[in-house]
Image (cartoon, rainbow, N blue to C red; front, side):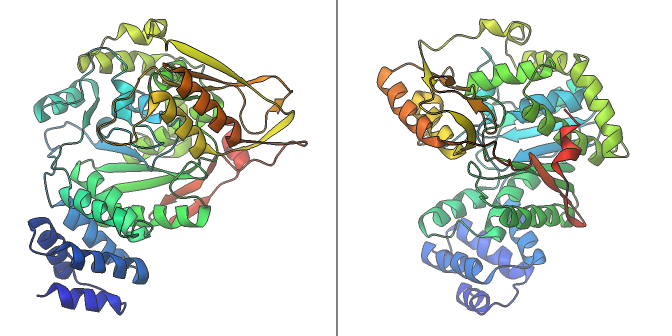
Length: 450
């Protein structure tokens, strides 16, 4: 078998065999196939695409290129949730404790934030002493004991994906549905959970800027998961403005605690509940989404999920008193209230610019080696659809350097657009994808959920 022939075959749009795909991925990982041939291979995929079977085989080849977590010692059906990346997305901190209370075994591997999107590992490290570098035995023990554990990804989890993505990043081959889907799903499959619920973000703060592309990605990832023997669902949710009202690690933890206290923002509560409902359905803890809704709402508003968060934090070495007393979190040394120079309604928010504003404050990483300030971030006082008067505060910035706050203020103000009349807002949840494809739902059906 020759890499030249595989490239030629895909260049002409023919479907590749499982053996050819595994040969290409393994050969590249082993150093036997050079960068220039893999670059040509990736470009051929971008231009000619892949069918469902090819994409599944590519995903499995990357998943099997390194460690595969063995969760067979966990007593129960295991579930994982993954977001394609957004701003203010702290749903894992809410969903994990919530579904764990319902008996779902959440065994989750997470990463750190990079660029304008945040990482769950960084958020959790806001709790003093919290540990995410867990030995596999401790990880499994925690899931068996409290039904929820979250650890940082091992360096050898789907190493082919890391090596291939580095090449895609410099060869203009990032924007390909098969390559995006296989990158995400290879790590999910290697992490071992039997049920996978995906949160595919759509909008200005997401990787997928429009609904058709998001639907294509969701359908592809769901097909991969099901072909690989995992019960997989995807929810398509809006990211045309940040989720909730906070952006920044510690601020988002505090907002997650508010939500688990039953006092969270409506959008964050709605999305978190719906994702949790699908996890219960996938794990057979409920026979329908409507049945699951009753279960998760009782756990959220009854206080059980908040108690589970404290238990989870303690199990991983953190101080659980911060859950009951979030006022203990340290505050940023400087804050700045940003006021509006216009009046009317917030028509739209460029969400990616809000994420970059938080990064400028010290709340994100520009490179993997950047040191973040867990206290830094943004509290949004006005969001899309809300009325604003001239001179009224629209946000509060938190940071440690005056010049950073000034730069973030300029960027944040430019991210806001105003209109004289109330704008028509996109739906918070566009619908869901399962083995039968994408199912759109109306905004009205979700507004009644929160």
